[in-house]
Image (cartoon, rainbow, N blue to C red; front, side, top):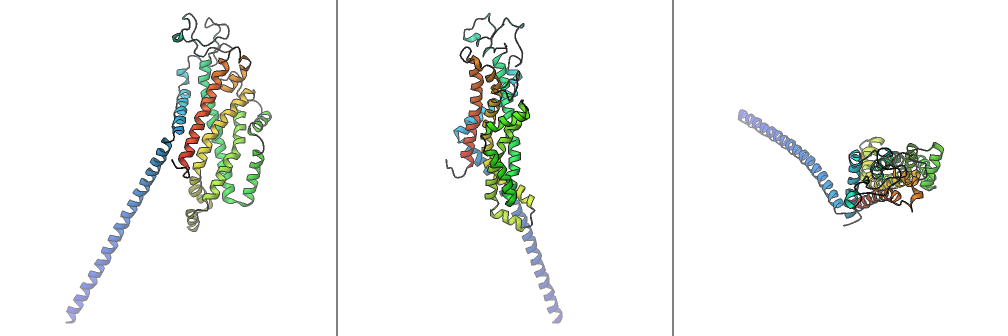
Length: 339
């Protein structure tokens, strides 16, 4: 009887051990399945969010139109040497039967065949206006993207540090930004260029400096809002460092307003650069820049209006493209706006 009792006890122990092992294995498998499902759900949510955002953007007519115009301008700037019939600084005297400024001439529209074809005519220095307008696209897009890029990087760092750290750091940074915002941006840019000297590089630096406060304030406002969220408190409770929380948890969620402001800021930067060049403080002749072309030929507005009209039209189209794109992105990204 004792042997049978002991035998049954051993069998019961084995059954219980087997059940424990089975439960552990089942738990492990279920946990692995949950992890896999969690990663799949995460990827699915990310893809769904991207598709949802793209659908919202594509439903915005202004964003689509602005994006198409911008894509066209980028293609023109990229293939400018192929599109332009002449070098932008090439003087045609001695190479064609042209000794002075000429009006636009297109053979398909009735211009005499014996007259050299220049789609937008030639300027006072007998250079092809069409080629200069095409190459001016490169300069203007470079100005817009480079100045806004620098302003966003510096403004993001200053605004993020001020909003996240608070206290005297925030007060010091924001008071400097307030001083910069107290001056009209174009007048402040003119003053900076007057100190640094004329030239496109100094004009780019001046435009970037006067643009920094806008992005610093946008990022600071977003950081102040995001840092109060529960997932930020959870990161602090788990022992996350200050820099980890700022750059991995807060800043990625403060980017959307910055994208919209940056898109609109590029248009402003292109206008400011054209204004500085028009005044002779930005790009210097013979650089093919739209503002410089306007400033050089401004006295010919009544005798040869095409020399002013086409560079001005190029500026208008470029600024319009960025404004339409920025408005469309704002309407698509802002969750408070329903379509």
